[in-house]
Amino acid sequence: MSADSNHLPAAQAAAHAGPPALLERLMFFSDAVFAIAITLLIIEVKVPHLPHGADATAHLQALADLLPNFTGFFVSFAVIGAFWAGHHRAFGLASHYAPGIVLPNLMMLCAIVLMPFATAYMSENYGAVVPTALYNLLLMTTGLLNLYLIRTVTRAPYTSGDTDARHLAMVRARGWGVTLGAALALVMSFVAAPLAQPMLITIPLWVRLAVARAVRRAGD
Image 1 (cartoon, rainbow, N blue to C red):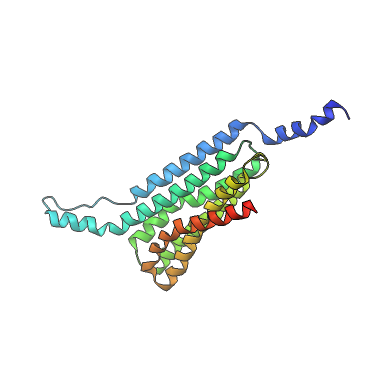
Image 2: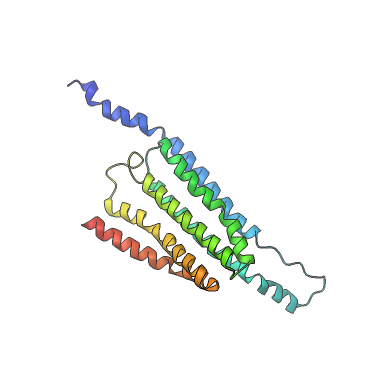
């Protein structure tokens, strides 16, 4: 067998991988979308307009009325931040670009940019079934799209075969936290809507359980 034929698979892999600059551009674009979505969350929290000379009690009452809005803001800020962190970890393992990653990435980002609307809708109608269910359905859908994206970008041809299996399993498993927490909140939306959002507190627990399970399986 000639030397040229020995180098053929490597040459084909390099051609398929494409320039790393394209991967960096996709990551920069994604970071910008995450940043804009997080910024839009606070824009939906409207500044109270009180008559000139309103006393402190009126101002405190106006701020108290915004408590559902601020709650929605902080919850969604944390959730979008978690999605960004997972995106950052997964793409940090990638060393090659291929066109097949574009659509899964866009699908997940599309769900992310819907979060400010869903957050505002739920906050303005806190405790109502439809807004609460819509928010948690979007959150769960985003989680599933995120899982698909992470699973895609952490396999060939995007990552090399020498990636540590335990670390790879942990990166893939962490995405289940938000997804399972949102699924629990979605079910609670139809049982007792005012108690649905507190169910998202279970997200760190789901992360720990999913990561522990993934690490055990990777060690088998």
